[in-house]
Structure formats: structure tokens, C-alpha cells
Amino acid sequence: MKLQQLKYICEVARSGLNVSAAAEALHAAQPGVSSQIKILEDELQVQIFERSGKRLVGVTEPGKAILQMADRILKEADNIRKVCEDYSNHSKGSLTVATTHTQARYALPEVVKKFRARYPNVILHITQGSPTQIAEMVVSGDADIAIATEGIHLFEDLAMLPCYEWNRCIVAPPDHPVLKVSPMTLEAIAQYPLITYDFAFAGRSKINQAFEKQGLKPNIVLTAIDSDIIKTYVELGLGIGLLAAMAFDPQRDVNLRKVDVAHLFEPSTTRIGIRRGSYLRGYMYSFIELFAPHLTRQAIIEAL
Image (cartoon, rainbow, N blue to C red):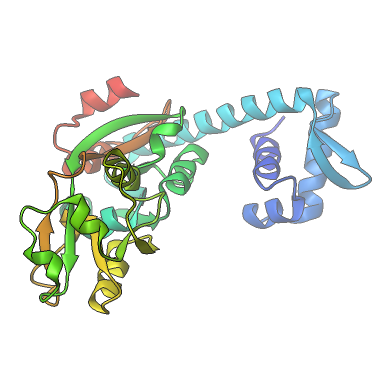
């Protein structure tokens, strides 16, 4: 039994039993992947995958147990490599952060700047997606940490570390009548076409709950996955925007005005998600602490 064979069966399962797609992801030849899987099955004297001719059509009952154990073995092998790298060269390596657009655009720039100054030899990857997508990246090992507000708490494989709370604002062109409402109310917001986040992003559930509690239905005419798109369409006059307060920059957003609406919505909490049982290198702890100073190395170890 070889680690390479375990990689093959896990990638095939992850690729929906498509051996060609798995081979492409592994940068291997499709016949070689199929051959190694058959060799492993012969050695174990059990079929991992169900077949119809040459096609894989399912996973056998013993195969399901084998895939779970193989996944754990591969993750521990990855941890062993990280331990060795940490001791041989503690300031060189890579870090992949999976996050949403709002966090990448507005919460992370200063953190990234400080981190790069402290660890110039660490290659930093920032990858974006929906909360569900970025959580899946961490669970699968394609990313080291996830940073998001919604969704990642649904993944039991992730340890959740609360970072900070935030709330929302209304943005509109300078002459829009909604800006004259004081104090701002949900009833006033509901009178106008509203542009806000897609349901999977940035505390959208809190927005829905607030309106429902008052028996109101907002006139949502457009949803987007990031704050900059929301502001762009507000500038075009398609509606007023409801977005994270941190996403409004008065120096950049000169064609818009902002009204704080924290009194209308429950605050949302941005969290960091880390795969349970994973080994974090020293510079990874530093990145997390730069983002959320209260998350010290000891606090993170206890959460994991």
C-alpha cells in the first residue's frame, strides 16, 4: 500500500468517480491511475469502487470505510511534512487563505501588508468564493484557513474562531430621498428598490430576519457577491444599497453617501475556520493573530 494509491482513490471519489478528471487533477496518466487503484484493490482483496464494465459507478461499503481512513492518513502525512518544514525552515513556505470578496477587499489588505513584511519568503495565496466553497477548500486541504461570515459554521470538520462583529449601512446617490430619513427605518428602506448581497454571503440571513420580524418584504431587485458590484449599480441609479459598513470608503466612493443602520440589524460575526487535527506552521499562527489579535497561538491550539 502506497500513499500515492491512497491519493488516487481519494481524488477519484472527490471527482465524482471520473477517473480522467482525477488523473488531470493529479497530473497523472489516466491508465496509470486506474492501474494503481486495481493493484491496491488486489492487495487489499476487496473492491473499493463498484464498476459497470470499465466505468466506476459507485463506492462499495468497505470502500466507504477505506476512503475515510485514507483521507485521514493523507492529512496526517501532510501534517508530518508541515512539522518537518517548520523545523527546517520556519520562515519559508506557503499559506492559502480562502475568503469572500468583502473580507479580501476590505478586512485583509493591512493584515497582508504586515504579514508580507514579517514573512517575505512565505508565498501567500488569497482565493475567493462563497462561504460554502471556501469551507470546502479547507476541509479538502486545498486551503489552510477560511475567513467568512456565513456558512462555515455548518462544517463539523472545521474549528470556528470568532474574529470580530460588524454591521451594515445604506448607500445611495447624494440626492436620494432615503438619505433624508432620520432615524432610518426598515419601512423607509422597503419603499425603494434594494441592491444587496446574494443569500449565501455576508450576513444576508440577518437582513431577511430583520424585515420578516417587522412583517415587511424588501424590494430586492439585484443581488451580488461583492460590495463593489453593489455600489456600482447603486451609482447607476438602480436602487439603494445595503452592505457591510466596512465596505464604504468615503475617499473612494465619492459618488455615494452612507447611512449607518446598525440599529436595525443584529450584528454579524466574521470567523476563521481551520480543519480540526491540522498542523499549523508558525507563520500561520502569526497571520491569524494579525487578523484577530485576541486569537493567540494558545487560544487556537485549544480550539483545534
